[in-house]
Image 1 (tube, one colour):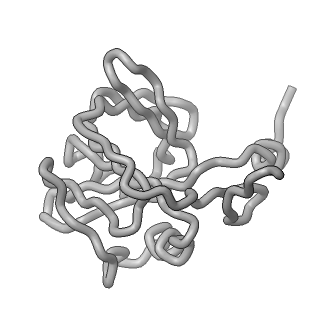
Image 2 (image 1 turned 135 degrees about the horizontal axis):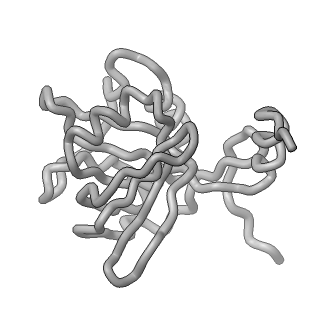
Length: 161
């Protein structure tokens, strides 16, 4: 059975995801990052998380070379930041506020969560990589709701009555 890519994307678009930016310091000393909607917790013991970058991503190659990364869970008010960092601009980080963590990783201002990791492994997964990270440190930085992606659009969580 052949599954068309557009059908696959359409059907799986019915499952909402959070929006994260994976950041690191590139080999040239500048911040680098990529937006992902495929982040997940993997293990409590040891603490492991994972995400799935596209195999053709230039940003991923920089993060992989760094050997460690920070997962920044974006807040519902950070859609414009998400769009900027998802772009292909030469300097995605122009005007972006961030601080370097104790592990030397960029933590985005306003992110609701930061999870700092060492690169544990990279496994081929079709047209993506499965990246496994060993958690070095983490923090819930605010109680603001996360930015969500659903059916091709950004949105936010709504409490049921």
